[in-house]
Image 1 (cartoon, rainbow, N blue to C red):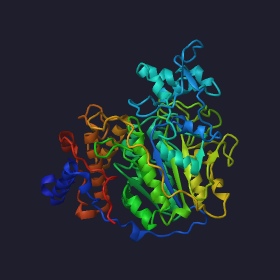
Image 2 (cartoon, helix red, strand yellow):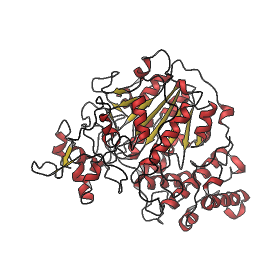
Image 3 (cartoon, rainbow, N blue to C red):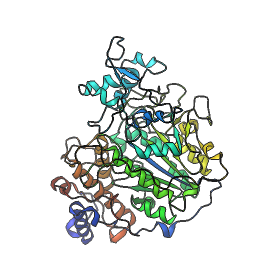
Length: 551
């Protein structure tokens, strides 16, 4: 125990917190309410923005490529650079005589998770790990099947499959009604954490994979949230299990505690017209029996993501803020699924001069695989397809995740400088909102109902964690300085998905209770939930994203 920390047996506040958190692990979710007062509407200040867009809502989904999710929408809109059925990959990249696997339209439930590490993506993009292969320009995009088949025999066919438009009905309706970018790329040819860092800060601070060491200390770079505050504007992060934005050290500050809200409060705040200027939505990352994951990460059911997307859109469409809003939907990275458009390789600047760690020493000079990105607003013309950017700071500028903070800066007229050289370089899309003098009045109020489920059995929550979920457990441990999982899962007591979800939610509540000073809990230095979460069979589980918000 650290010097100066009180013994658990000596503090009634610690005992009270312990009972509360144990209750979170064993109480049905719909009986649990957010334990903090919803103070946001009382402190909400309307800051005037000189522009059409005054509220931006960002929803980042997980691990699916453009072709995999929306490629077949070319069937109803030939302008989309999608799939024709002629796209294929060899079983053995570089072998002219290799059998080929063609794209299909039968994607449904994908399990297991395809390869999307830095190494796997190099193989998928260039056909192998030989450094000479990286000299190919354009990138051949010919190693997806090879990489997948090396994981499991015949798995290559799964990564070449894509969804029929009717299966992803929410995405389809939004593509038909608003704007789809068909040349938007992940910022890094790597996994979730580096790309999510770029989305909010235009750099990963040198991370080319999920970096345990940096996660422990918190990534130190400036974020778009800082820039927004510096201009007197507001932001809010609405999360279901755990806000991954807490990867950033700056967002762990006490003064930021009131910027975090349970996911369901988004719907309440939208209805009341008090959403912040900048909203980040973090979906459910853990696949549980009563609360299945809706982030689209394999092996999660895409039907759940479609349901959540429908709910988010309909809430914003009915909000008093709709006429001044922009909903951005994107995917953090391609997740190992095939895409036929070559990833850009030239003219991409290193954001901050930091080189990735050995053995690859990546210089952040090429982008990742293409992902689907949508701009949804009454200021966007129906059925827009955005190809090459028109607003290019340099001839090589592209749409990639750093385009988000770069465009936020332009739309909100932020006074701060660009975050890094990357968002200063990235293409922006504020021109989308200049084509109309008045907002559209024909935007649908309701989207079609998506399929009830694409998987054939409900999740049990008893399976092992994905690498991303392990990172969330470590982040949760860091927030409360739980020494058991502070440096990752390796060599520590294992958790299944149920247990990990209960653990991260209890830890984030402990952290926010301390930061807010609620319920006289300021004395609490930390509360390791390791013993409880590793021993309890969590058949019933709380979900911050499923609770009923106080109305």
